[in-house]
Amino acid sequence: MKQSILLGLLLVLIQSAFAQDKIVKLNGDEIKARVREIKLQEIVYQHPDSLEGKLHLIPKAEVFMVQYENGTKEMITQSVVNQDSEPITRTPEQMYELGRYDAQHLYKGRGAMWGSAASGFVFPYGLAGSAAIGLVKPKAKNHPVSDVAYLSDPNYVKGYEDRAKRRKWGKVAAGTGIGLGVATVFIAVLVSQVAFMP
View (cartoon, rainbow, N blue to C red):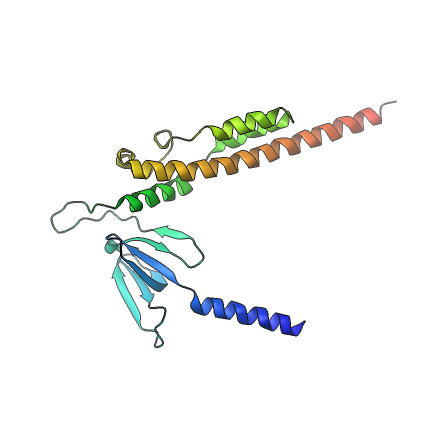
C-alpha cells in the first residue's frame, strides 16, 4: 500500500516537472514556458528547461493567448495598436480561437436548458423534443460577443458557433436530466398518493 502511494506521488512530481505552458504570440510564434504571473502590462515566465530559474518578461501587447499545461486557455484580449496606429491583424486560427473563447465565456444557452427540461418532463416523447432543440445550431449574431466587429470575420463566427454548439448540447443534456428528474419525483408522489388512498 505504501509503495503504491509513493509511486503515485513520484508520478505526480515527474508530471509537474515536465509540465509546460505555451505562450502564443500575435504573429503565431509559440514559446514553451512556465507562466509565473500575468501582470497588467506583461507576462512573467520561465523557460521550462531553465535550471537557474531566471524569469523572463514579454509585453502583453505581443501575446494572443496563454495555453496552460492542463489544457485551459487564457485569451490576452487587450486592444493593441502598432506604431502606425493600425490595429494588429490576427491570423484565421487566432480569430477561430477567439470565437471559441467568447462562446465559452459569453454563450449561456439557458433557453436550450429550460426548453429541454420542459421537453424531458414528458418522457419518452420529450426526448425527441430535446434532440430537436440540440440540433438547432446557435448563431453568433444572436448571442453576446466581445466585439460586434468580429461578426464580419467568418473564422471568428465558425469558432464561436462550434463552441456554442458543444455548450448547447451540454445545456440540453442538463435540461433533459432536470425534466426527467422532476417527472420521476412527480410520478413517485402520484403513485404514493394513489397507493395510500382508502
